Amino acid sequence: MTVTWHDGKPFTAADVVFTWEYAADPATAAVTSGTYKELARVEKLDSHAVRVVFKKPTPFWAEAFCGPTGQILPRHVFESFQGGKSREAPANLKPVGTGPYRIVDFRPGDVVRAELNPAYHVPNRPFFDTLEMKGGGDAVSAARAVIQTGEFDYAWNMQVEDEILVRMEQGGKGEVQFVYGPYLEFVMCNQSDPWKEVDGERSSPRLTHPFLTDPAVRSALNLLVDRASIQEEIYGRLGRTTANFLNVPPRFRSGNTRWEFSIEKANQILDAANWQRGPDGVRAKDGKRLRMVFQTSINAPRQKTQAIVKQACAKAGIEVELKSIVASVFFGSDPANWDTFPHFGTDVQMYTTTMDHPDPQRLMNQFTSWEIASKENK
Image 1 (cartoon, one colour):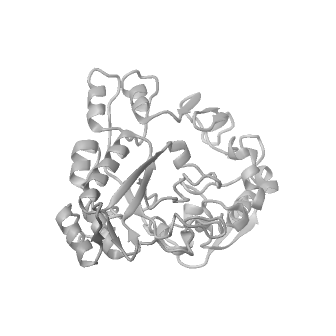
Image 2 (tube, helix red, strand yellow; image 1 turned 180 degrees about the horizontal axis):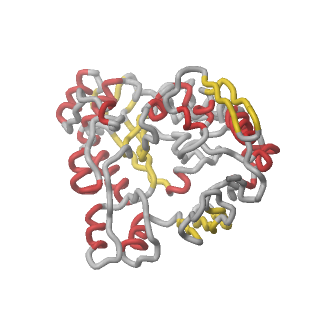
Image 3 (cartoon, helix red, strand yellow; image 1 turned 90 degrees about the vertical axis):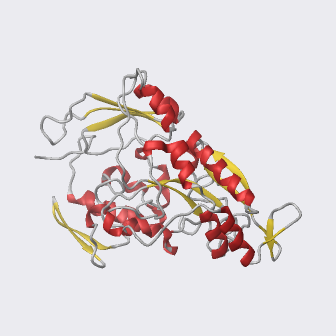
């Protein structure tokens, strides 16, 4: 069976080799560049065969070329945009692939429309003539469009309070289905300083954070997240509490960790570390005040979680300013916008991440120094 790109051009081994060359080029600034760093070389053997050579044993070897984080690029579409011109490629907004649907309309933050690919290489697939994915808006509206009105067939990973979903299900046209998996809502502490600039860059790896590098402060913060209230009052049946960042597969989940909510213990830890309360109740040490900006995307569960954390922190002498950003901006990739989560322009931030593979290396790589988003690596 011959596989062709959506524009009718043949798919060949040259596209696979090119994908590696394109993504591994530092000037391209591909988000998958970390994946391709594990490859020593990709060799074309014939028109439809390649040899992939890794630098070391790699259990998740297919990640570079398939799955959620790696796809093959059509060389004839992207070859003139390799390197510094990668952001200018028209196919960034109107992809050319080999899949069952071809994109006919893409409006960022709004809608993606696709139609059946008549040249798809798998017989009798796909099953629907058209596909429409709606973005933007808010999570509650998305849930309502599926559960109550039936305007859409499916909504995924919604950040909506469970009590609202239960009300929608009563007499509605849809239902909520869920499984407990690798998705994790977490708070990240900035180890760099977001309030100082080096060569026009905030949160530079060259500047350490004034107080979040202190283990005592991070230990106190860990005690000030009321996971039980967040789970019971906001997420309900949709979530479970955990003390671990790595939770699945079970063999990788530590059984030695426990979470605890204790304002009293947080105060004891900060007292012992000589973080003293000032006249306004905010702790300080060596001229550094425990004042933080806490950012996340706009949706009700996250704003309620922020409020719970802020309230507890205040009782421990930590002042927290809350910042909420439109999701399309927060999860965007604009290199000039400091409100995106990769820029990390605040002290702490919260969002959901997931583990795409049964081996946890790529998930945990985000805590390694070479994965830090910076001006140097674009």
